[in-house]
Image (cartoon, rainbow, N blue to C red):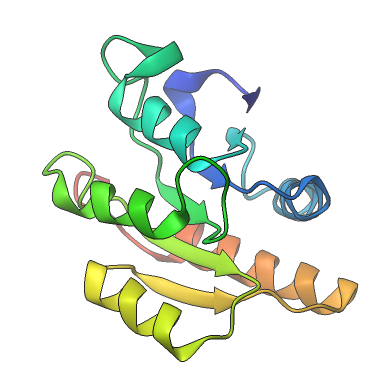
Amino acid sequence: MTGSTTNMVEVLLVEDAPEDAELTMRTLKKHNLANNLMWVKDGAEAVDFLFGTGENAGPPACVPRVILLDLHLPKLDGLEVLRRLKADPVTRQIPVVVLTSSTEESDMRECYALGVNSFVSKPVEFDAFMKVVGKLGFYWLLVNKLPGQ
């Protein structure tokens, strides 16, 4: 895992592609939208971080304000991560944005059936990708309000 201290995580980025992760992190930080961002590289690492299991055994470090979740992940795919998040009363309310290369209708339908808050297909073009990530960050970190804020 990389990022700031775990007790202050605003964004949990679950992404196995280093290029996409780097671009996402740079864009959010450039717009001062995520000074406290944690990047995990697979679904199992995300579940361990959020539930305090595996290498993160113990009480969960924090509850992020938003999770950016890729679908095609090693070890545990994004759909299973989403399924576990939305099944647990503690993590159910965390907004989850699926940010994926998938444009499959079936992926979109399954994500919404599981309770995803937003489904966004990653633009292939560099500038378009940066604009989409910037807008996502602005909305989920500054505009959207969560209980207890």
